[in-house]
Image (cartoon, rainbow, N blue to C red; front, side):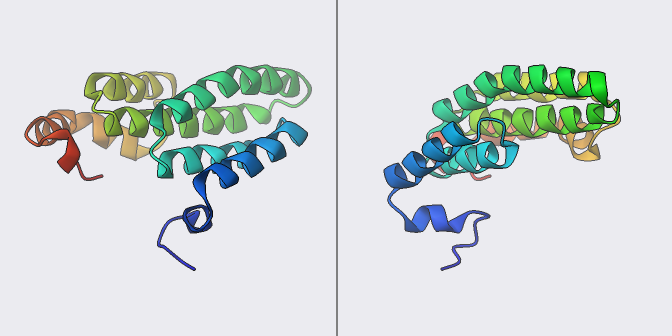
Length: 147
């Protein structure tokens, strides 16, 4: 059953059951970035934006510690850490947008841009068009926002 979503199978299962399974899997595999991404995706699809933000924030500290330890052994790990911060930041920004917290979303994107100026051009173009984005969201009632 393909619903057009990256993790469409989550929509096919009862939301609570899918989250329970992901929570159990993460308890057994604490350091799995992929499982964490799937759980954040599930929370986002279930419109549990505050929970998705909280999960990203909580696990960023753990990821920072893991990558600091790993980079002391292998300097090539720094790029992996950057991508870990970027996917979390982009998800947090998307969640803030869905919650109608435009300024918070822009702050996250701007902070990412400052920390990673050479990373995705999409961030730079999004920031350069932030006035258009803000006008788009401010002109519609919150129930009509389309992302």
